Amino acid sequence: MLALLDQAGKAAQASNEKEFRIAIKVNTWPVGPLQANCYFIFETNGGAGLIVDPGGDPDFLVSAIGEAGGRCEAIFLTHGHPDHLGGVAGLAKATGAPVYASAEVKMVLAEPGKFMLFPGMPAFETNSVNNLLAGGETIKINAIDVHVIATPGHSPGSLTYFVADSLFTGDLLFHGSVGRTDLPGGSFDMLAASVKGLILRYPDDTKVYPGHGNTTTLAAEREDNPFLTDLGW
Image (tube, rainbow, N blue to C red; front, side, top):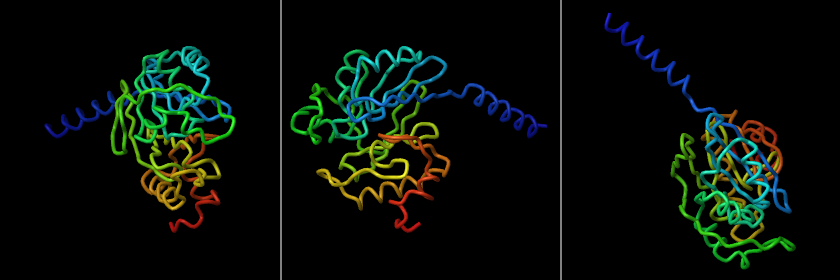
């Protein structure tokens, strides 16, 4: 009888956990002159959420977040290239959200004029990084867990964020391609190791939200991405 009661209690607990599990939605907005993907990850019940890579157009982002019924409670940055950072200062000022990023990004945001890698990119404001990340951390934004993974290669301080069943990879991995490694600090060997690490660590159906272009999955990239065929699976 005790065993039956214990089983019933566990079943009820599992049912309650499933019932109250947080539902998360992802909105994608290409922003800035290079149309970098900015992601808003938020709870559908309550609207608390985080932004990944506000690369420009902060006024638009503030409006879009409001129209989505959400609140930006944190800003996470994948790497230190200007097309992913142009809207950080404006969004941080408008929302009061703290910024989470690597030491690489902190250096760029402190003196953005020194790191304009692409001709014609508009200047953007300086901003502080409130919380330094190196990989291995888990950050809780309200009820959303953000797992931080160091994925160097496109740039030395590149980070990937795993949230729910999805990876936000910045310019590490794209649909059918990978990030360029000919910019300062880039390394194809490091990038390949970072991508392989993600593919071996996470399930095949894990969604990939890249810094540019369309959403994909790890399985699709492992099978069809021409840049990954020689990684030695």
